[in-house]
Length: 454
Image (cartoon, rainbow, N blue to C red; front, top):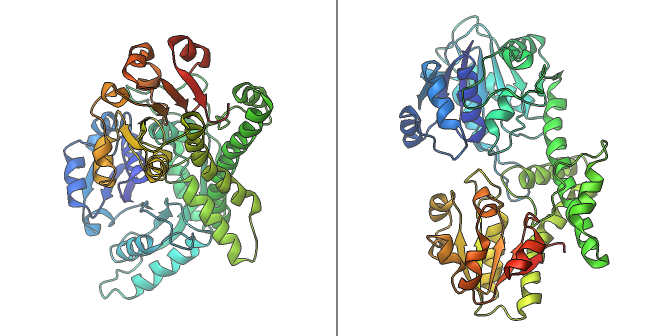
């Protein structure tokens, strides 16, 4: 099938490259010429494990352009995967989505094209985009005869750092449209994934337990709500584990054992019960805020979702409080933060806990030292005020520190020979922000071990 993907961020690029790998003829359009030039050269503008390898394997079916007139004509499916950042009131800012829809409408020329909302958009956006498409198409002086199109929703459920696996071996695929023909087209598009009939990438073999992928085929509004409901539930789960973690610390219980005991219940499951400094990234914060904003339009409140957001914000403050309890005075202290990206295997800094923790420490008069094995370059560009605090090496970060906080559980940090750094520190205090270090081992090495929920 001929596919157009609008936007080459995490979602758009992963979608386009994966579909091209499956054999579809894919053109990705992005208005950023520098990004397009980079992709044409086989280089990935984001850090995502395996993406450049998949780019190479899919190259014969993949084109990058800045022109809608090159990308849209003849397309069976047009995915719109542009950013939808939060507006001041919490609702998604849809200006990029509107611009993309208008541009797509002015290039449509196929007998039937499915325009797919791939971005996370408010409930009802499918109808809104459909109206924009039809209004914009009607204003075209050169509009061709016999052109038909319909809007569908196909929410993504990608984990940054695992985006390719989540695309090729997903838990489920959700498609929603009020047009039956659209659902048939998307069913055909995804058939190789649904049936798992494709030959896997050389670097990412099919999991042994991979079976046929469930397809949820529904209406527009339900597909849109599924995305928000799923992300909000995962955010709730993490915040609940963190809330229980605070109680565990008070009563002397081990939160990691509590979480393990809960997770073995098949009704609950073990994933997203990791206590720590809280969630970040582009999805949970934005989507929970948008869900609350949408509910308010219908005079509904979302007290559970609001509580999850409050707990998550509190976790970042607790990390600083734990340091203050231990060191008594933060003014003049050197505090090192290991990890800046909001999670491992990505360079994404959006809503990263490390940013709040660093700024809070600076506001209290502490001196901070920062390190990340992957995200430093992006950090310099996006956080110029904090960039001077970057340490070139891990040794530099530990040197003369009064405490070090493990913020992001990069494998590079978990595999450190921690014993070699004890002597570099002024005070060998380690705050385990993700509950991934062995407390007894750290104490034997000579550290004063702290954790957010211990």
